[in-house]
Image 1 (cartoon, helix red, strand yellow):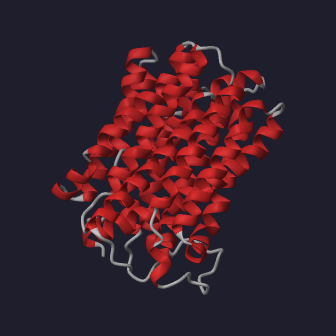
Image 2 (cartoon, one colour; image 1 turned 135 degrees about the horizontal axis):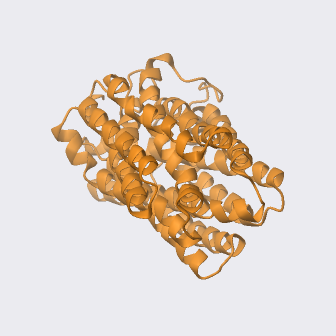
Length: 389
């Protein structure tokens, strides 16, 4: 590992924070317009669930190669390439004329999102190692801030009558430029040893990180439900307009941001397993509140509770996975992400199919059960991230 000067580390950290922000903002801009795109293409909840499944396929396919690709080309290169590809694939999502075309577009959008995600988390782990203190939660806070900003952007664009096509064009140009400005400050941490040509490009998650993956899976179910169904729930169950529907994900992102801003402090004061257990109780209670009281106030409060409860679960799992002895950080993070994002991305389509059979309110009970199960899966968090080196 290259020795990095303090001022260089500070610049590097800000660049990584920017990349997390970009990832969250682009994703939230897409999420905020799902209800309108669903209406434009006249898709039922079941049909929307099947379309969203393609995004899940893209993410999981990319995750299976992410560790090897990062080992060969470096996390900086893949972070920047992933960000630019993410913006490029967002652009046409708002003008797809048919659900099949939208599905194919989402396949590539999901792939770009996951490659960027793993690479920027690998950069984050290296920053933590250099600083020798937990900072991963602050990076994920930047992602959440991006999510909140993206959700607000979506609400503003909808209220101004700007369609998804024009909205996504503006978003893609804006965040591509920010990516190019931040890219030089990312650090090529692999340069000391050179790219590992022996690392296989395709690999399944190592068995040692499966328990951490289970933690991420349970938390990601809640995050995925909020990302893809919070707006739809407010519009179809509560009966709000498009602008108010966008506030569901905004409430979730806002409280998640608050939790992650204090997450590094909490990690140094409490046992990670305790934090995960308490978070699971808060998140499951929030979803239950939204189910039992389908009115704007209680639903927004409930979605906010989900954000607060799940805020630091995934950052903790990624930080520990990036420091497992004998496993490269990119491979460890990719392994946990593969299992976790199976919940994040396969969960929402399953919720859509269950909603088609029963109702969206009934389908969200699955989220209550799985986020509540963090009480039991939290035992995988045995070490504080700062002790895992």
